[in-house]
Length: 126
Image (cartoon, rainbow, N blue to C red):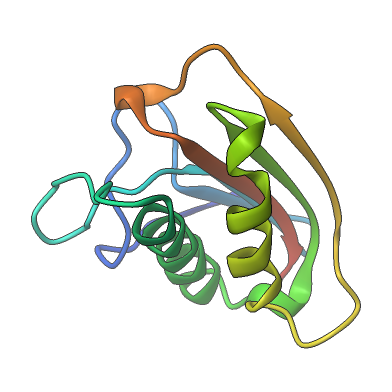
């Protein structure tokens, strides 16, 4: 049976989807962007600020589901431009203690609300 995951510590969905869905011991986290949950405002003054907000949102959804960054099996990173890869990758790497998840990073022609980075994940959950 599937369980819908929702937390007010991450942005509410901006469409017909859930922040995450738990099923069979796994949690599937929808793509997170740099929306500050309490204000609903985008945090995009720099790629560092934007990436940190995305990772904070991802972490909040993982926590609500009973998981964390070290339980992530796979992530997908979407960038508006591959020139952002080095800085995003460095901030991303800091969230893991060891045993990095599988991942792809792709440049896309556009992301919701004109953001530069979006990250989704699949993780194990209790």
